Image 1 (cartoon, helix red, strand yellow):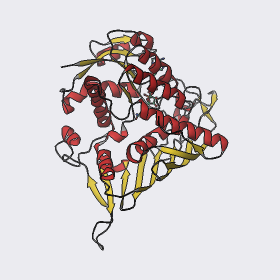
Image 2 (image 1 turned 90 degrees about the horizontal axis):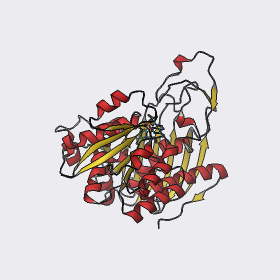
Image 3 (image 1 turned 120 degrees about the horizontal axis):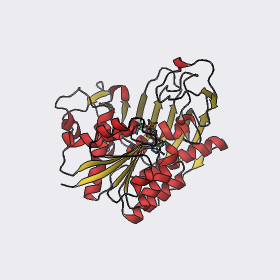
Image 4 (image 1 turned 90 degrees about the vertical axis):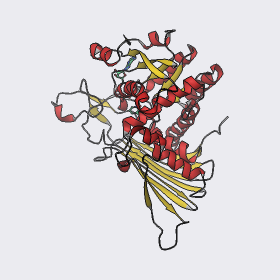
Length: 391
Ligand SMILES: NC(=O)c1ccc[n+]([C@@H]2O[C@H](COP(=O)([O-])OP(=O)(O)OC[C@H]3O[C@@H](n4cnc5c(N)ncnc54)[C@H](O)[C@@H]3O)[C@@H](O)[C@H]2O)c1
């Protein structure tokens, strides 16, 4: 059985831990028939927890420089869980070294960089994957199946949002996510790309858009050691304050190539919204509604239902769906965030061992970066921006 040798870059961070767990865990649920992952290296710049890291993946080397993993002939797959600004240079170096690459979102800081990565991968015949894991929840496979079968007719409108309040408190500490040097597109690349991944998966390519970006809280206190979810309670009043140099929130309207239109907003300063992700898709014969608060449930409205009995009906995805059944034998026990990343890890390994790319590849990541670019440009210009078609 093939085993893919993986290096996890940014291993001590949130995604580094999730990806490590996902590669180690997927055979328990999704089987090892398409191969397994061997965690060969954990790369962490300043591993305060080197012993802990080593214990998480016995046999893995703990490295401090990502270049050592990229240049190691004993590694097949480079898995990038680093801050956004490192995605492009590290992915490019890895592809040029002949490695398959799995990269967290956003794929790159600009569409030009993303295209270059996709082109290199295609030319070298390497497998690529972007970490847009939310649509890999089986509930969205069902949504896609309903749309593709024509059950809700021609798509007319996509409404989507993702709201979090990690920076809702104006004195929540500064971190790389608010730094335009480390995360040049801010909330657009961070949270917007999740909504864009649903748009790409369920509706299709975007051809033009208009967006408004906002910095809502221009300065934040610098607290050493703070990370996502850190609170401002430790403030002493003697902190330095740093400028927030990328957008906190965005409102966007778009047109899709297939004639549908879209209204989307996303924010990291939505006070009280710990994590809200939702979409509504309206077609000529019916509609679909999804809300992460009920993350295994889809609501379907159909004009085909008998008059007098029409209304949104809740469909809970359960063991009828093979991917759900692989994890849980009973409905309503619910798959969660980590399971979607386990599904993603299994698909990454399957696509490498079978030599068959699976959604979302770097080509998908490129289109999502085109949407990000267009949001940034539209907000700068204050006007609609066209997106170049594929090819
Ligand atoms: N798909 C998702 O649902 C999802 C969720 C969260 C984050 N992300 C993405 O994952 C990436 C990482 O986010 P996170 O929340 O895990 O961040 P994090 O800050 O928790 O982790 C990043 C890690 O990288 C390490 N690091 C930084 N520079 C390094 C270098 N040069 N070499 C080695 N290690 C280095 C940091 O020390 C940290 O441990 C981001 O691009 C983010 O957008 C995706």
